[in-house]
Image 1 (spheres, rainbow, N blue to C red):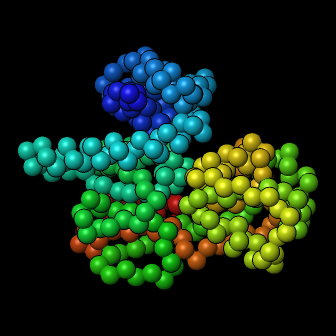
Image 2 (cartoon, rainbow, N blue to C red):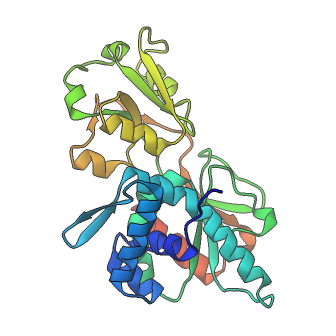
Image 3 (tube, rainbow, N blue to C red):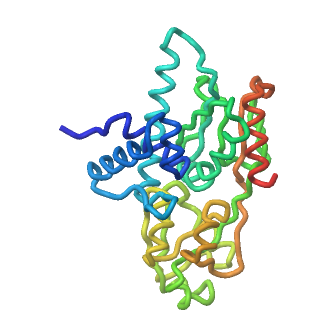
Amino acid sequence: MSQIPSTSALLSFRSAARHLSFLQAAKDRNVTPGAISRQIQGLEELLGTRLFDRHHKRVELTPQGRDYLAEITTPLDHIAAATARLRDGRDSGAISICAYPTFAIRWLLPRWGRFYDRHPEVDVRLTTSLNPVDFTTGDYDLAIQVMADDARPAGLENIKFMEINTFPVCNPGLAGDIRQPADLERQTLIHSGPRPTDWRRWLTTAGLPTLNGARELRFESLNLAIQAAIEGIGVAIGIEALFSDELEQGRLVRLFDLERRSAHPFQIVYPEGKAQDPRLIAFRDWLLEEAGG
């Protein structure tokens, strides 16, 4: 029989991952930091892998921790939403949002605490999904989606939120062998399942619609593709807004000065009927502020 971690351990892990703090997770869960630490340690032992790297007075997610967070967030949020709907038929008062897993992990969650510091009265439930949101079901109030620049979906409001600028990235040790785009023929090109056309589109922009000789690897998530690049396995296509930390820390190097700006930026999308909801307005305006928009 497959082993399923306790809900308490999963909730403690999710809270610690969102805040990158065992202390803040303890406050959220109304337990001691030691209890959070023990629950996460037990979860790591069950999974057979580290979920956090522990540093002095701070923690950060390992690549395995990021992927596990993306996998468990949606099931936990679905359980919470189902419980809220059935419990005496009451509205929980929360707003439900949906975002892509890599966007949520790389961009949204590191900033999450700043929203709650400013708006402690607003409860936000986050679900991650690679699929477009169907607002007709009423499950979501707002989504962050990649949409065409000129998209005007019926019954929805959409606001361009953040550009998607893409370019090749790799481990610093590999960068010395790559001086011009044609040198990529001797490298391994790393693809991600959710964005299968990024390499083709960037190469076309670079004037290399075909690239003979390059090996190719494919990973099921953008997180895994970028981690493979960090480990020196090959060259991946990075998104500036999502992987700036890795570039600033020197774990990744940007190759060439050429970037491709997608015609499908990140957009904030919500039903027109919810446009006056003060909770949604607070979250929308905070997102725009964080993005510098």
